[in-house]
Image (cartoon, rainbow, N blue to C red):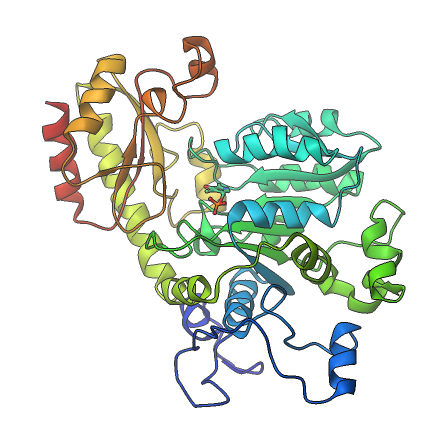
Amino acid sequence: MSEDTPFSGFATRCIHAGQQPDPATGARITPIYQTTSYVFESAEHAANLFALKEFGNIYTRIMNPTQGALEAKVAALDGGTAALATASGHAAQMLALHCLMQPGDELVAARQLYGGSINQFSHSFKQFGWHVVWADADDPDSFRKALSEKTRAIFIESIANPSGQIVDIEAIAKVAQEAHVPLIVDNTMATPYLVRPFEHGANVVSYSLTKFMNGHGNSMGGMIVDGGNFDWGADDRFPLLTEPNPSYNGMKLYETFGDMTLAIAARVLGLRDLGPAIAPLNAFLTLTGLETLPLRMQRHCDNALRVAEWLEQDDRVAWVKYSGLKSSPYYELHQKYCPKGAGSVFTFGLKGGFGAGVKLVNSVKLFSHLANIGDVRSLIIHPASTTHSQLTEEQLVAAGAGPEVIRVSIGLEDPEDLIADLDQAMT
Ligand SMILES: *Cc1c(COP(=O)(O)O)cnc(C)c1O
């Protein structure tokens, strides 16, 4: 899709944005540029690339054409100014924050995050001297109360994993704006098909591409998308972006790169020095997955609603927490932020408790019992006997992973087959 294309519908962008026929060969599909490095045109060209006076390929740790097509596509889907692909969702979170946080700085984050993010923030980020202050995703005011002079970002998920609860992005964006700190939204569970966080006041979007964006459970990947809507120079809180950079001859990144500063800083500082680059093959597989994103996401959501409605009326089921159900306390937020669907990950409780949970995951035939989400295949896990098995019963309940809780990620199979599988496995 050329820059001046009149075709800008979401499905069209999923297929065409970021991808032209290969300039060298005419190949219609973006090739897997499986190379580590690129020949310079001249000594001057090489010098300009290294000094950031000119953009171009140097070394695949920093930039690669297959990765570049993926970045341009996701930036176009979210309405961002620029993007950076990374080796995983965790790498994207680390690199986004690495541009913003100095040792001793604070991050305010929703308590309702993916468990892996809670670990990353609480333990590994602590080693960088970054401190996390937790807030309650259901209570925008708790973010205001958690702010301090040292806060450098607010971090939330649009649809939280695993609870599936929908977060009031606009209310939390207002808190961020008033405090002049950027709002980072992890949009992994929603994808830009369901929620486009920049339209609700977010400044940065991060993804685990590993899940619905790729959609086929075959590669790890992450993405940072720059909303281009935050003034990094309003005060002295973001020195990496505003001060002269000693590793680029004293260049000031914000002055030079304007509304793409965060995405560029994450590449030329974070990715360059910390190194979690996405493999070209993974970028290629994710590009292919994104072509069908609207079709897949709609089917994921429609199937999830069918299965959730069936579970809700079944006698063996104590409760179902799915934001797409009219009984859900998040139903109104679902109608506001993602009326096309509430995603496909949700939890339910079995009346039979721990034993019934173990029996269910042991007896399914179509669902895969594993620790992932966002695959074309339906997935199931019993957190109390797996991911959360080290917790006490009290901690299990606090984490929303009580002994009776089952988490599912509903795939693209026929919903009748998914219901039949759960029915036989619960019997
Ligand atoms: C899986 C996940 C991540 C981490 O992504 P990886 O690609 O596994 O590193 C972050 N956020 C959410 C919501 C996730 O589901």
